[in-house]
Amino acid sequence: MAFAALLLGMLMASLDTNVVVAALPSLGPSLGQPDAVAGVTAAYLLVVAVATPLHGSLGDRWGRRVMFVVSVLVFAAGSFACALAPSMPALIGFRALQGLGGSGLIVAAVSAMAELFDREQMIRRQGWLTAMFAVSSIGGAPLDGFLAAGPGWQWIFLVNPPICLVALGLGANSVPARRAATPAAKHRGFDVLGATLVAVGGASIVGLGSSDTLARSPLWAPMLVVVALMAMVLLVKVERRVAAPLIPPRLFADPGLSRSVAATLASGVALFGSFTFVPLAITAGARVDPSTLGLLLLPVSVGQLAASSGFVVLTRRWPAITAWGRVGLLMGVVGMLSIAAVPMLGPGVVRTTVTLLGLALAGAALGLSMQAYTLVAQARAPIEIVGATTATVTFTRQIGGSLGIAVFGWLALLLGESGGLTTVFVLAAAVLLTGVVLAPRSYHDQPRAAAASAASRAGA
Image: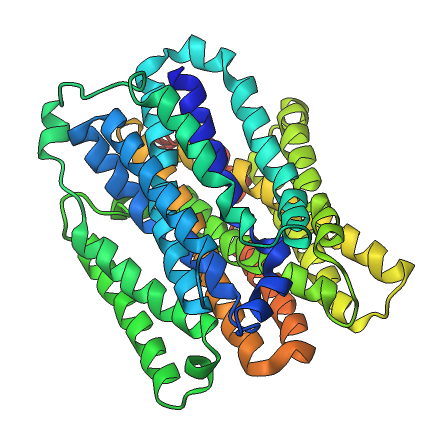
């Protein structure tokens, strides 16, 4: 029962990451601000990123059951509020509330499963987890488009509260309750100042990408940029001093780790950040109903799943993980440039072909880069900070996605639909090329411990 409840929670949180994407072209005009749709996705991603370490810390103190129940209730309240949102700013704010609950659902699920099952049991349950992610990836966009074209975009959010009730019924008494905290857990702090700086800097950029007034204001636009830059500089200083930083500075002492984080950030900004604007590019100069749009977005999920599955098989014969990561980033470059050309093409077979090819390559790039650079980072990390390393890679990807959405949204607002969308995807391709340059090289494939041993033998 606990496993089923946790799977339902992860399914809802995963679906709602991009579930509104296919509805964005119709959602914006219905709320009177068609150009401010970027904030709907960026707010959710930003809060999920910032709240992830907070939920982990509170779960260590209060237990997984308390955090699961609270997260389900917050997610349900945020979903219901989103459905009733009277304006775009209100929807963006309620999406942030929903993200707070979604982050808790993901963290509670991962942590509780580690308490419920040993390694062998978790391996046997990987099929369920894979199926859950497949459903959220492949089914999200068509479901989104179907609901937006039929009963209305509000039902994208109204389907969540009933599922939340089922998850509560299954997990309220079965998810592990409070456990005796270890001395490390008792004394481990939470980087409140670091999280605040991330939230302030991210919110500044999200504001620029969500409001046409702010994006074009000669006063507010420069001010928000300065605030974001100052928050970034202060974050670097704070992370070097606090006892439990959000992003441990020692990770960057190893070049393989730091390069993996840099490549992950680039893929997050370019691939997660640009996905919000894919429906706008597809519908630019063409009439596409939401249900058809949802089906057109399927190649992203299919490409991601195909690349992820193929990666597991192909790396047994060609185990150069870093090379696969760079291949993924280069596929993303081609995919972004293909999508950049879509708004300039007239309706017809060529436009549809280029769209499907670009989306499939973008999905494959996401699947390859996520797996490759997570594996490289975990292999290079000292054993005592493997968990922190994995969390940092995930955190970096999420932050990159939310900031990418906001910055691209700002550009789209400033340049308008005609040239703005093409510029967004060309810039995304440039970011991925930068990621290729910064990505780990073949000599970083060797685990850190083995590399250190080899260096020691060479020195001797």
